[in-house]
Length: 143
Image 1 (cartoon, rainbow, N blue to C red):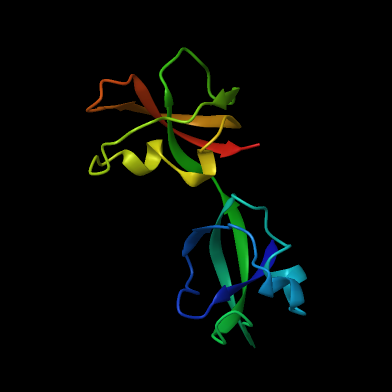
Image 2 (cartoon, rainbow, N blue to C red; image 1 turned 90 degrees about the vertical axis):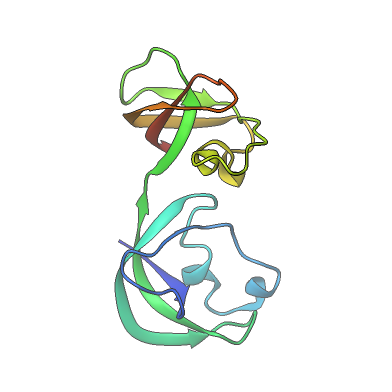
C-alpha cells in the first residue's frame, strides 16, 4: 500500500493517473514526501481507498485528499515479434501521425518516448494499424 495526496476533484476509487513528478513549488511543501516522493515518476497508479484527511496544495490552493494507491500495469503497443509472457524487452518509441486512430494512446506516450525496458505480462492481440505497422497490444510495466 502506498499513501499519496490526490487532488480532491479527482480523488475517487478507481481513478488512474501517471505520476509525472513534482514542481519547484512542491519542493517547498511539508507534504513533499507523501505527495510527490512516495510515487515513482512515469508509473501509473490507481486510487484504492480515500481517507478523510485533506491538505491544501501550494501550487493552486486546491485541496488534496490522503489516498491509498497501487501501481497498475500499462496498456501499450509493441512491435510484433515472437515472445512469451513475462519476457523483458526494450520498447522503442513508435512514430505516428494518426492522432485520430483509436490505438494512438497505446502507441504514442510521454511515458514511453524513448527506448524503455518493459516486462510484458499479457498479449492482448494484434492492433489494426492504419500505417501498416505490425503491432501487438500488451499489458506490461516499465522496469
